[in-house]
Image 1 (cartoon, rainbow, N blue to C red):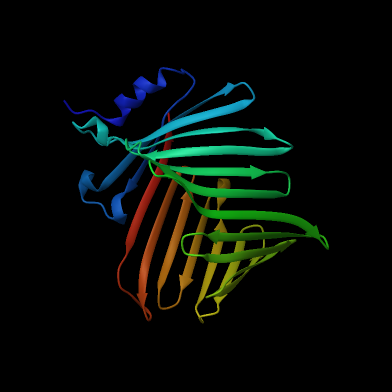
Image 2: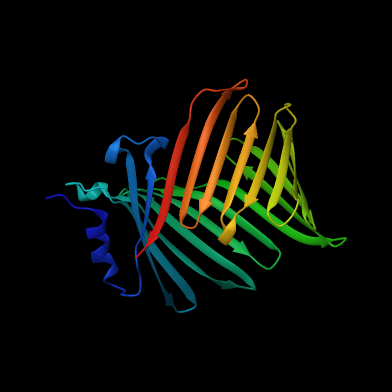
Length: 263
């Protein structure tokens, strides 16, 4: 007998009648060959209080019917959060599928202007810190400045992003030992925004966002000699069209369509 994530989550969700699963359907690798090209996913989450802690947990599972119930879960996660000394602190662990021998861990701490995040993994051999990210925001001359350093321990790669925002213009600088880039985003009017990006290797891209009715949008990103990407957000629908470029010739089209459905 074939089972689906709908049957699995209907059993889980009965623990809380107010918790409803959400369905997301995407096209595998941007291509569709009948129903076999669809990748439906169902997610479910719940929350409760335990003393001074807020506890959240959930599951994301494939909605494709199968006779192997162990293949349905894509990930299972849990999160605990609370306040310590004026800082909001949370820890989140996620298991891939039903493999409980290795967990991805995220630890976050933040106050009104600062945040720190540690990405780690834990298994039978112990815990390993993989990446550390920090962020600090402050006001300067009627503008908002954000500094975001990141460090990856395994590769010893480090970079920093500095963002300066004032009025309808923002400037973002990303710098590492190997490369640097600068992006200037300008809100031309209520419906139009442009954002060119120049990198130290000589590459260039241009993003144009058009705001549509009811909060929808169409974003076009052109990277010469590389690709043209269109992202169209229409309510719960998101469509991405990626067209690789060879000079001025379009060499193919990759389409991905996604919709979130809540029950």
